[in-house]
Image 1 (cartoon, rainbow, N blue to C red):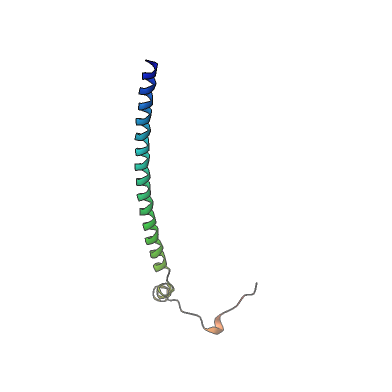
Image 2: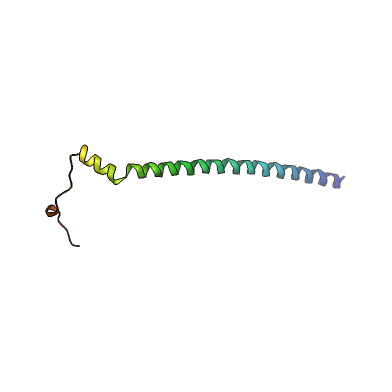
Length: 81
């Protein structure tokens, strides 16, 4: 009788362990998909950041919206540390 109880408890332990393993594997798969989505979004954001920070775009905005111009060579003052 004791052996039968040990056998049933052991079988239930195996079933529970397999169940938990499958649940954890599913969670890992879900997290990896989420990580891939975040990696893709990061790449898109970095591309967008590079586009917004292009020197030609900034210079065009500075000239057009702010009315800025490049100073003449003699207007530039160098400060020594």
